[in-house]
Length: 431
Ligand code: PMP
Picture 1 (cartoon, rainbow, N blue to C red):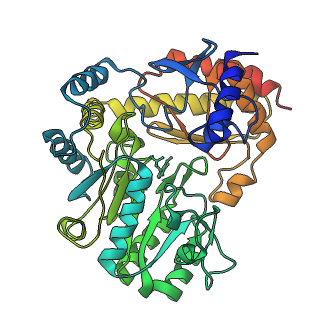
Picture 2: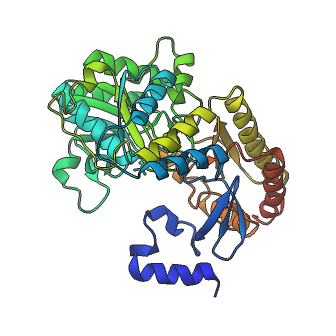
Picture 3: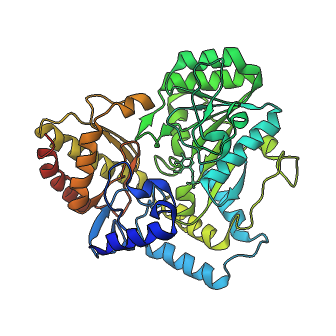
């Protein structure tokens, strides 16, 4: 028995499914999860001391790679000054100022400890600000595990969503309308039916929880118009895309494509904490003034703005602002997906790819899916065999076909070439 197997057996005894977050359990692909012993740069070593090239990077945060010396130094210094105070610190202001500078649609920001908390709080704030209850989300987008967001589509637009999870009251889910991503007709119909009751539309502008699917420009344009017309807030969930697809997040990309475009609210996480528990939500001054202690919408956190987490986030945000950082990251990420595409084609396997900045997706299909059901219709059996083939060869991709992948600044051209090389044999064995 490998040490990974032993640890998994031991973990399952004391932790449900052996993991503290479900996708880590390899349920979709089968097999034993790799328990991480340590990590450095683009690699981690598992409990059997096997090295893996890491294309998950903690599901996005590790944009500089693991253990960047300047980040380690900042975290060490902060830890020596104290772990948590439950009182304000200067670093929280610095981090907030940094976020405002990089994401101009945000005028004020509140820090939380997880993306779930930030998304949940953003929705409460949107409801408090508008005095409305209903919200729109899209099938395949994940915004954390708050009750109102764990909802799947109902049978039609006149009816409302059903809970995706046991334990979510139908009464909570009924205020969430779930639509197909990139479907303008459905969006128009939902606004025509419920426009006056809608507090917000929550969307992953580039969805990373159904592999990698971009919101089309016409879809985003219409979403912005409809929100403005009906007085609903457009909330961008940039937990994954923020500081990942571009320094200004996905909204900076849509602002280039759609004149004057900006969301009303933004939810962030992952990269802003550099691997520490830190997330945020922000909006205009007017909206944020509704939050306690200024306004009637309550939101709080013992560890919010934690001094060690803010040190890690600040050091990370400083480093990603170096000139050429995103250009280089995008080139490396493209090198990876184009290389995989080339090898798949040589092996006669239907395979499509997409990437933006340091985030990517690949599909065992002959065209890029535009929504969740289309992602589910891609070849799962081939994906699973590809995943295990690459894992055996020491290249760690997300263990499910509906997840995006991530490249860090520590993934050099040589590291990526090694992965492409390894994929050759794996693709060749897929048919
Ligand atoms: N929103 C998006 C887009 C996410 O990808 C995630 C997590 N993967 C979340 C929200 C929830 O963040 P957290 O896991 O930090 O609660």
